[in-house]
Length: 186
Length: 327
Image (tube, rainbow over all chains, first blue to last red; front, top):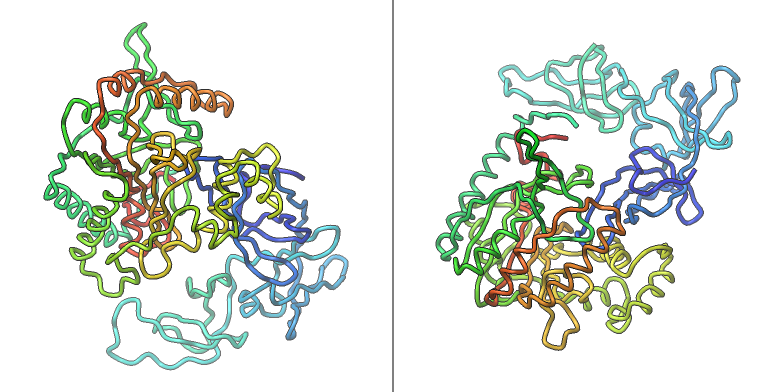
């Protein structure tokens, strides 16, 4: 499908120099003279590399038709994450370089959407939030009541996150996997 | 669009007010007169790539089209012709058909000022002095940029240094378009101005204002300045823009005061507006009449005030310096 670069938005998949990239950010920019531009940050879905490209806003861009299918996260190794289509039991892999930091917050059984193009997985759509159990935490120091103060804790996927002082071992916290930020407790 | 309330950014907004105060104080000290201006006008200066907001005045059967001003230029120049001397406007300006982004809002705050008897590079020195004045007033330790000097770069030097396009190629439309094609830019239906802007945005701008000082980019190809005077050899327009951390914050140019030349450019710009299918607004003929009467040699500067505040508050998005935004 072809579209004006002016219509690009975060999450779109585009062809650029023969490879598939995902738009991370797209900002309209008018320099006052010459046509307006669409300054896009795009991520290569093979290497995970980010680049910035300024499209003319009326330039035609090839946008990929993709389907998103819910899958179950199984596990990861040093290179990929492994997912399963629960309906067909087919397994898929997505490189860690493409998934990025989000992979640190996925635990077995997490359901998430995978974008496919011609039945090949491109990348995942990170869940809005993940619920993870705290496995290691220091007790809050008494008297430390500065509002907004945070401490590091380790959650069940092994990654460290910053949470409010009142969070204890065994509790389940809600994390935004894209930013790694604590958003609440269960 | 929605109304967004941003009380969480109260501190940034307080800095906004401090900067506003510093600007008023600096310009007053330098002898500029503050001018309050309308934002609705029955006619505008035609600009080929800028879409406007159109509205209507209504009274019974009487209807008259009015436009929100994309810049206070048409008013301030009239006053300059009338002999008001150095003057400035700090207020709202409007640009349509540009979606809100991290560095642009359709309704934004513009600082525009004119100084008589100086050229663009001389006014640049005063702009730098104003930036120093603001920085001293705010006294922010930890600012990563110093306003002690400009990093000066001509457009030709910048294209040569960052885009490997030499001066001959830059100033020759055919060679320039060929070079853009070699760089794999899409050239179908694109004008010289389009490709100039694209290469500037892609290869050059991200490198400007990143060496600890603001970068002053100056001497643009003549195609890229509708209201700037040409240099003596008529090769370049006496125009400059300044950048901080890759972001264009403001620009200035020696003002064109030859009314015949201005009239000619008005006609060209109007034709391009038509071709670009932009709103067909009434053209401000009074502006040409005023120029006929005689505009003194002067330089005008336009600074995106919200962007200036972004620099001093160190935020990455323009909506973070205001308490209410329409996004």
